[in-house]
Length: 162
Length: 162
DNA sequence: TATTGTTATACTCTATAACTATA
DNA sequence: TATAGTTATAGAGTATAACAATA
Image (cartoon, rainbow over all chains, first blue to last red):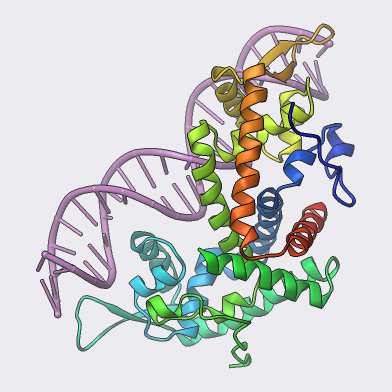
């Protein structure tokens, strides 16, 4: 055995009480904590968006379309880093809900210019407020505003490296 | 429109160059950046673990078993927050690779006491070093040691809230 | 030839529910 | 009746590859 078991970081033994087992080795990795934290955030997001008829990815697509009117599906898939084929279903879903519209482009009959409908714009504003509330509740009790900004900044730095 | 578009945080327009589209609204959310960051980390982890014949979850299971000899599958699934049914396949895979063993327990013939084999112990040490190297490379160029500790601490706080 | 959107398909990860053997 | 492990199945979420229409 070439590795000493790490000293538990801060208030550790997250799971110890329930099971009698520890995850200190894994807890020393940023990636492990990031996965666990993201799963919690995702679960909470799902609960917040469901009553609005949105999922994480449809909310993301709607946000990008609101921010970038007349964007194409290919551009959308590049911004959100998913395949074009996956975007079709997401745009279908939003179009079926009358939240965005696929508009033909004069110069190029292959592509669509996507726009949020008035209904889509209104729903997005509601959803945005709901997600902001969700993050304020979830993170507000744990981290100061400065810490939250720091966390977001560090995560963003990591994103930009990819 | 009740919301002003947020000022881009720090060096923003992550995706602007490639597509001409922005994600500033989403970029203001911690959850969005966490997802994007985690996907990068996960992709890198996969690349690091694949030559060792491990995936993220089998590495996690192996780590917990090394740290908690004679743990049961139910305890394991509680620590890693997955269902018992999903644990069966993971333990099968590690057992088939002769990395852990399912040992019968004298007092209770329903349960297994899981242990890493010598081969499993050695592979885990190699994998642990590889993952440490992966994190050092990925995060070292972006964040100071203090920042990395801070990031891990904040993520852990979020985990503990769940 | 290359690009946009599309379809069909498959793969990974995980959850649910029902089963068995033990307790 | 309750628990540990198991199996079968299904649902997300996403990727790959091939295709039609258009450039």
